[in-house]
Amino acid sequence: MRTHPESAARGRPPIEAADEGPLDPHVLVVMGATGNLARRKLFPALFHLWHLHLLPERFRLICSSRTAPGTEDAFLPMVHAAMEVYRGTIDDLAWQEFARRISFVPTFEDDGAALERAVAEAAKELGNDCEILYYLAVPPSATESVVRMLGTFDVPGSAKIVLEKPFGKDVESARRLNETLHDFFEERQIYRIDHFLGKEAVQNILALRFANGIFQPVWNYQHICYVQIDVPEQIDIQGRAEFMESTGTFRDMISTHLFQLLGFVALAPPAHMDADSLHHEMIKVFRAIRPIDPERVVFGQYDGYRDEAGVDEASTVETFVAMEVYVDDWYWIGVPFYLRTGKALAEGRRTITIGFREPPLKIFPGDVNDTCNELVLELTDDPTIFADVRAKVPGAAFRLGRGRMRLALVEAFPEAEPLEAYERLILDVMRGDSMLFISTEQVELLWLLCDPLLRNPPRPMHYPRGSWGPREALRLPAEHGWRLPDS
Ligand code: BG6
Image 1 (tube, protein in one colour):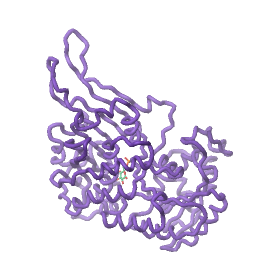
Image 2 (cartoon, protein in one colour; image 1 turned 60 degrees about the vertical axis):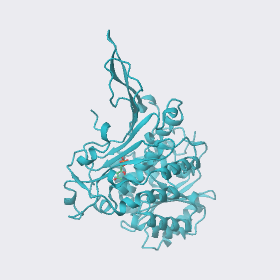
Image 3 (cartoon, helix red, strand yellow; image 1 turned 30 degrees about the vertical axis):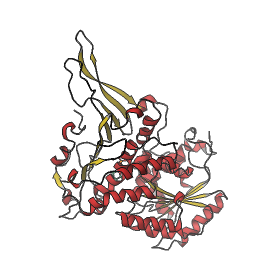
Image 4 (cartoon, helix red, strand yellow; image 1 turned 45 degrees about the horizontal axis):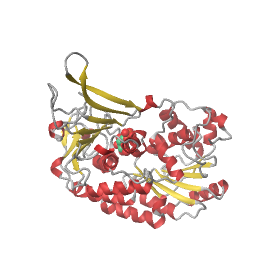
């Protein structure tokens, strides 16, 4: 267990560290520190990690941005306000201790001289074993120039760089970005975040599949007849018009989060639970995905999207995607994977459904063919896994009914201290563990797969807010239909 000298100030006892030894000292540099991501996710995550005693004892947070406020005095209240909004009331003493580690240094266009000096000083102060972690929370258009600027910094200590999606917008731009990155950083120093992989429930897919003997033998085309990866969102674009107009839902969600989920469901057992083994298996899956059939893809746009401030009144950007994907390997040949996500839909869910084949023989009276045997993973913050099975209804007659086997993770492990996705992933970067991050090869393979469709995208169909998307999408999974909404 690690202890910190200022334990008392943090208002809670230290919890057991998630990993073996203490972390090396870190200077964490957040670029784009006044932006939405930093305020909504990064600062609350860092504060919580610090509060849980999971950050290194020697730690500095240097924040930078090309926009105001320009000084620390104006910046700190902004961070404090953001934390109150996204984390609730903040203990004052704990905040004072945390805030002592934060500084703000503006950057101007490509001039990062002041930032470079601040990073070098902080690194020297923290000692020889100090590591520097650059976190790019900047808009996609700024990524390359920021990488070039940071790459030329002459500072002591080894560096790591964290990037947010989208990693380019097609094969060509992704390759260009990767070349720029590799001009300054080695692959082992680069961490591409897909925050879905930091979610407890998503990592649990791996635990479920590979820490148990019951699932793996049936985890293939001989026993499974379809998979659904369904991530409807109730929220609309929430003012992110510029982002949505330039990115669209396919690049925002499908070529990133949903394909990563597909990888976790479809990958073959890795030899070890480490970055190389997992990436190797993910790459095999992405290589085996059949070219996407545009006839089996539905794009949608919610009614009223074009009236949102900042949206082109003739926009053809998709706010919804549903599609069928096949993985042509020895495990999944012939099994359709249905992917669906969109904004302004009826519910917000993250549901993976594995549909099992019917038993070969019907021997019970009243036995029917329906979609009974489904294993369902609800990837919420309160993750649940359940399996729908047929069972005998108690009583004199031999009558079948539907029952449900259920595992609720929070109930099963009441003492556990779950980490939010960003918290988990920031810790992983500090530990130097890239298992839950996306490699260069994965990025390029996914763009190779998606590019043909995106060069010639389907016309988006309209759908009403609060619905389940365009009618055409409802029909996509043929006889079984979508598992959601729950019947
Ligand atoms: C982000 C997308 O990566 O993920 C958003 O840019 C989306 O459009 C969000 O709403 C969903 O993530 P979560 O964790 O809120 O389900």
